[in-house]
Length: 269
Image (cartoon, rainbow, N blue to C red; front, top):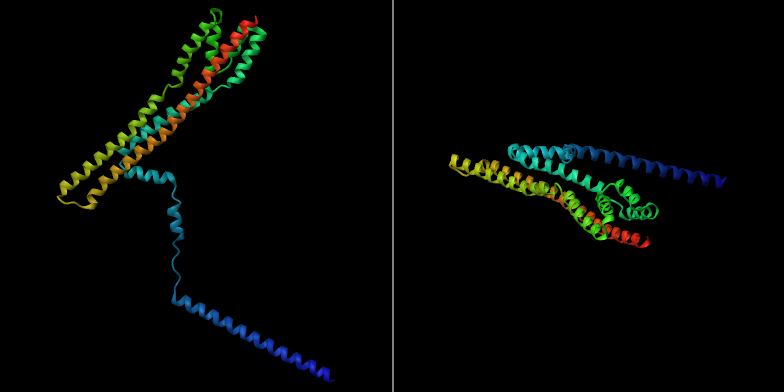
C-alpha cells in the first residue's frame, strides 16, 4: 500500500512538472509571436528590388549592342559594321577553302607509291587527279613531266607550288584592308563627333556638359566599334595565315618525298 501511494505521488509530481513546462512553452511562443508582430509594425516590409536588378543584369547582348549602335549615331557606326560584314564573309570563305585544301600527305604518298609499283606513272597520275587539294595538284604536274626527267619534275613542282601558294593567299589582302580601314573609320567618327561638340560650344557661348556629352559619346563609341572590328578580323586573318603556312610546309615536304619516290621508281626499273 505504501508503495502504491509512493508511485501515485511520483506520478502526480511528474504530471505537474509537465504541465508547468507546457505552460512556459506556450507563453514563450506567444511572446515570440507578439515580438515578431511588433517588429513588423515598426519596420514595414521593404520593396523587393531583386527582380528589377535581375532584369537589368539579364539584358541580352544583342539589345546592348543595338542600344550602343543607336547612341553612337548609325551614320558613323554603319561604316565599321560594313567592314566587319565584308571582312567576315571573306574570312569564312577562306577558312572553308583552306580546310578543304588540307590533304593527308602521308596517305597520298603511300597511294602514289603503290600506284607506281603496280601501274607505273599513269596509275599514279590517276590517283593524284582523283585527290583534292594543292598537294595532289603539284603531284599531278610533277608526274606529267616525268618523261622529261627528274630535273624537269623538280622545276615543275617548284613553279606550280608558287601558283598554288598564290591561290591559297587569295582574298587575304582584302581582310588586311578591312583591318586597317575599320579603325580609320572609327577615328573619323571621333574627329567628326569632337567637331560637333565644339560647334555646339561655340553656338551656345558656354561650356556645358550636356552640350559636349553627345559629341564625345559619338566619338568614343565609333572608336570602340572600329577597334573591335579590327580585333575580330585580325584573329581570323592570323588563323588563315597560320593555316596557309601549314599547307605550304606540307606541300614542300610532300614535293621532296615525291621526287625521292620517282628517283626510286626509275632506279628500280
